[in-house]
Length: 414
Image 1: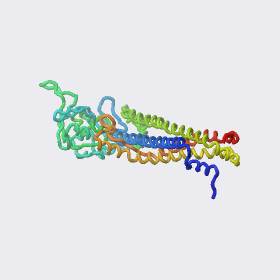
Image 2: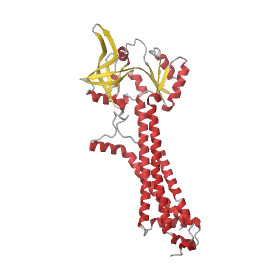
Image 3: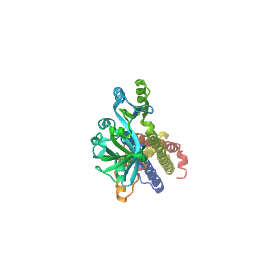
Image 4: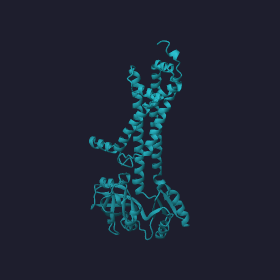
């Protein structure tokens, strides 16, 4: 049976029970350090990928990829503008909107809210709102019915549900014989949506005709909202659309409203990944120290092998095999542990929150209320490759030291 000499001896050294328990302990620490480093990298990068995914699917699924509006006045010819925009490449859909800021009150509870006047059928083409209705229906937003759809956190904080009444207070005041009176309107809750993000506590939707009456807009809308097939091409595409329209319109895109949050997540992912790679480097240094001590401990064996004809290259490969085995075992165990944790971390955190009555992420502070995770094969491949590469490089110096051992010097005191 074919057995490469260096591989065979290196595996024997790795599996043999050493008399020096301290060296065995350091080898175990090296393997555990590498395992924990790899597992931590996979879990943390998966969590950051989860935040990235939730931002794209939830937050950016509710906010427009881009908007087109007029300068300081209603967009009166929005149907013609929308028709032209819908013909552009990459545009999935358009929808008009009227926006206002106000306060909702119910039984003494007051909450600030951003009101969006929408056309329900067109809104379904550019938003995930209809897919996340938990109670009621988006189709219930009929003209002149004065219905309103609230976010789940907003509805919960006000103690209302479908069928209840809320009062909308707009900052614009009306002057009458009784003096200055704030503009008030009673609405009926016809739906509750939940996307698991901060938007649940600050957004409300009404029919666009009701919004026009509230803002006393005789014609036109505030603007049109766009959705593109590629989120990251939205800034360039909307600039091109404005240029092609040939008129003076104001354009905006999601990078101006939520771009900083997305960039922060990307930067945190890179920095955390870089910091956690230091754990792998520390484990690699442990492999170096382990092999240096093994070389010192095995000087007599090395000398005997040299006298039997083993070349310095073979001696070097023996100890490279031994160090590589430690690296491979630590990396594989860490990969398995990291993958298992990455796939279950959301459920584990949810169980901890439910069992001990604590909440790690609050939607009032963070943009989601749970810990997401998305395992990506590319991240796992990179982590495993880097860990194996570092482990292999860590074996070179001790193995080289072993190959430089002089048989006469090593056997002098044997």
